[in-house]
Length: 194
Image 1 (cartoon, helix red, strand yellow):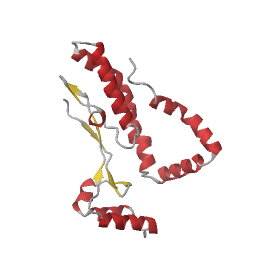
Image 2: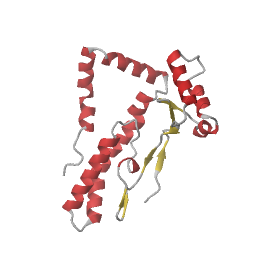
Image 3: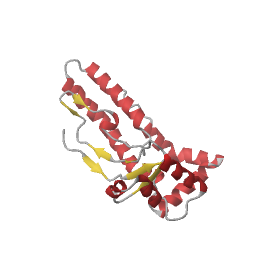
Image 4: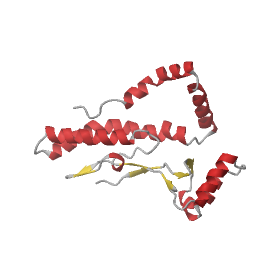
């Protein structure tokens, strides 16, 4: 397989909180609680966040990790195939991981069945049919998805807050549904249909 191309989606995760960092290594050179306090400070924490940080600090078991997106030129070599996040790595910011993993596996099975004895052709067709959709989802995870879940700029934060306010209103929901219809249509196509 060709060497994967890493994308800069470095985010620390802990206590259900996400944050961006330009120095991933520094996050792991110190105790995770220090990285979390640095990321969510320097302002004093409120009672809810302080409680979560204390619970994290006292926990016997926890996850503190980073998220990355890798783009690969190919998802298969000979008869070895990568599926789901191992192949197209949408990350949690796409909201499409499980559904695309199942659809990709379904499509692969269908194309292997349609091309009995010709695995190379089935894999080529699978890649050609799947790649445009996955490329779109990867891009969406790096752009809209990332800025929604982990806003970086003041503009990102204002947009997310405004969106949350609009979506709490019945009229706002209807307007946003109409505006988002195209995006939802692109996300809901049956990529496994042959």
